Image 1 (cartoon, rainbow, N blue to C red):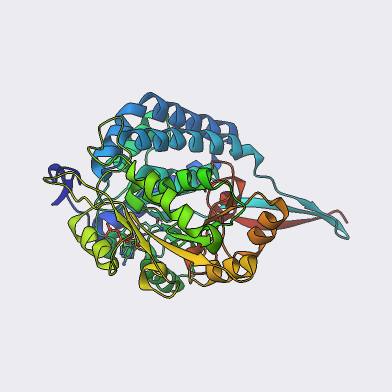
Image 2 (tube, rainbow, N blue to C red):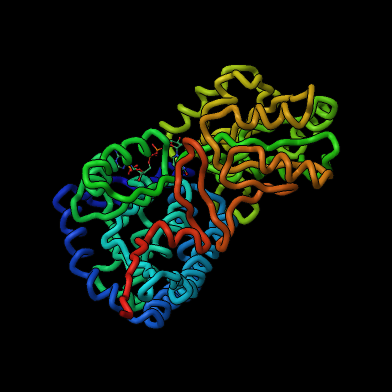
Length: 450
Ligand code: NDP
């Protein structure tokens, strides 16, 4: 049995059987059996049931938000935003079903055309930080393309995925198309990676396990999409609207208690405004409301587990420039922490995945130096540039090796735009029409007219 714990109270909120290899194989067999009929469903009908699922998510918005808030310890206001996005994702991919087009290609002697074929059974392995959201980013395009799915949520946070699977059935998605298996990554995840009947793994999680996915997938030449860690830079030039940039910076790293692959956990500040910006950042961070996730005004909750809190704490080796307060009593709390760092410090290089931000000055040739430091990382997932100089903003945006960048903003994720990493942040794109490429195969057909 696995105990599912509320990280804010340390109370057990559910106990679940942990599946093993046998249950995983049974789920793959169900998904395989359901595939021929699901791929043959008329596009308009597939779109209709996906839209019905989106509507059911909207109807169960508060229930799903509360499940997510309690299981992850995330503030209820944020959980509501995430569940709203889940519904939008299913609406988007319902609309995409009949817009994922093939081509006709001019050739001699006949007609050449391409089709987008589903892959078959896809295994989805998801993390604990945004459980329902990230599941929907994979389920939406996978189902729209006509695949069937075995979803393995993180053992720490399986509750919202289980509820979503019930809603999928209620929406009219046929039995066997969406299967959820709760169990350990090293057992259920590993079996999905190696299973000969699983055509693709869509994975979000650590770079370390991402490597395991690639290694394991080699045996059966599985398709793989990897969305891994990040150490993204928030670059503040001296000509930026500093008040706006400083007011936005805490959210960019303390949202979800910093357990966010897109966290701008390195703030690079041009030296001439460094002190001013740091002061403003401390003021803005002081105002972050940390506490009971179910309280409407809470902006930051606890970390996911005691073990993770220990890992996060181990990164804070130097005296912080600022450290906030946390509630007393039970819960895996960790305060908002600002550290002045050098680019070579561990805290400036490794993914902390907690509410800890490293502030680093840059000088000399400001633009070149900022790009050099931003790119001096194994990761390349997201990032921000704050400047009033539009040409510079675009030059720097083109020069930073990262999959998602915002100018004068810290947002990374939109339903209709591609999301994914460069370098060891992974490959493949989620969201938008780009995600469909990861859940389909291009087939080329030539029809002789001679
Ligand atoms: P993991 O990468 O271990 O977990 C992500 C998912 O992979 C979970 O469902 C997990 O299952 C599963 N998994 C674990 N091991 C295997 C395996 N051998 N084969 C197949 N699947 C597996 O992340 P952690 O939870 O350990 O977090 C560690 C660090 O990873 C974080 O501190 C953060 O730096 C990074 N991370 C990044 C995320 C992102 O959004 N990119 C999300 C989560 C973590 P289970 O947990 O049930 O065993």
